[in-house]
Length: 479
Ligand code: GLU
Image: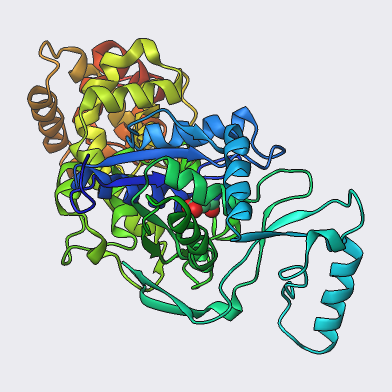
């Protein structure tokens, strides 16, 4: 058996399904995954699906889909917390039998009265341990009861958190909370501890909104260790939550909070979100661009900051632009083709990528940039484009069309030479020709380089688009 010191690192991500993978959850998953990979350990996934109403199959699938998309693969099939209720109850019974837990017969009305009194006297609202030292025989025959943990009342509990440092809580402040409800179902607090133990979790990395819970969970671990051994304290790392630009906890009012929204609505690539989430709360000097492989090599908990980080969409977009430029053209073409419903034009899109990529910060911008390839004649013109096509411009397009029609080599170089020669002939700057060309070819005033556009559209389509806007060559419309 492996000794305690050489124990393999086991981390877990334990989402409660809410309908989507929250960006904060994704970062927690990422940190757990990276920590396990960095230390050659295992990363596990546990679906905390005890809230049956919210934990629909669809909500669970959404989380798994988001994790897959980010490339966070786990080392074992997911554990479903709801499957394990019997095991949780078994541990509650062990704690009860060993005197680390007790039955509480307080009725809901009694507890309500207790709370009302605490409220009135401005006392901390917590269970007053009224059944801690009473005997079961004092309860009415067959009365329902819950099982509560007997938390030490003296001394203090210290957690040496890998991120927060040493945190101390007086034991008297921790209430004897419920482990098992009257109907025999386990509470969340019990389930988490039992599952973490049974899954062999060594490191609990999660949001710092769970720091308080750690002080309630650790007493179960320690009690079980006393009872049967083999329940070492886990290492805790409570990571500060992500905040919005205004410094408040990130929520829907700041914009999208689901991973899938970044993929679908913002057109973010998974490696960009991976990199961004990594940098959101963890740093290595001032490095911004860090690949997956480098992250596995560099990640450790000492790089996790103590203060909340702010979500900055601009930074994410800039990183996304970087990864778009790095990305394989065929892969981007596939993404764009599916968004445009142009799967049959994969090759054309792939050819267009080198000219679309440099100016795009998202897949959506690639989609917008590629749209001109597929518009049907007659092209719809934006107002700005229409304004460029005055009589003079149409005249010039007519002349240009006649020249381009004679072009046998439909290449950037040849098209550029011909167009320039014509501009010189008209004693005009190239722009005076290029702008109406762009309007005629794309219906807009922004596009990739005009000769790239001609090549991508091909001779026939280019001429047809130009001719549709041109005054017949040789017409005397101007003067
Ligand atoms: N299921 C909890 C949540 O989604 C996490 C529990 C834990 O990490 O211990 O917030």
